Amino acid sequence: MKNKLIVLSGPSGVGKGTIVKELLKKGGYALSVSCTTRPKRNGEKEGISYFFVSEEKFRETIASGGFLEYNNHFGNFYGTPKTFVEKQLLTYDVILEIEVDGALSVKRSYPDALLIMILPPDENELKARLLKRGSEDGKSIAERLSRMDYEVSKKSEYDFTVINDDLQTAVEEIERIIKSAKK
Ligand code: 5GP
Image: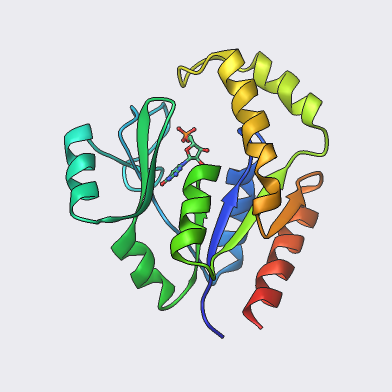
């Protein structure tokens, strides 16, 4: 059974982070830690949440072909480190938690990658929650909502869509999808 590159995406606030934590608890998975040029938020840890790097360093890594994919998202760069992912794939299924444009670019270079879109049971309810959330990441409400519509509009380009209504059910469904893709 070949190890899989698993890409999880979905609108902000849908619970991707919690799903990833549950998958990691089960063992057999490695999570790719991305590089970003965005400032560290409270509670985030270097090398665990992200590798926080300068734009200069990020551009150097692009030039040396160090990213499996990268994107500029709301004015900040985010990229998946290539060597780390390729090394981890020798032993584990590797999870990338990235936005849709990066995900679709992964699929172009790794057609075997498994793209899973996580969606909320009720998009309007998620929109209402996003409206209430502060603007700690510098995104305006209009930007958040239009980004959510954009992400959801790409779902047909994903291999699978999973609704995160009940956390354990969503995690089990994702595990079933991965197991059956590895057969
Ligand atoms: P945040 O700034 O809230 O941590 O992340 C913003 C968005 O960037 C999220 O949708 C997250 O999934 C995405 N993201 C995180 N790392 C990467 C990456 O390496 N590549 C791409 N393309 N998107 C990423």
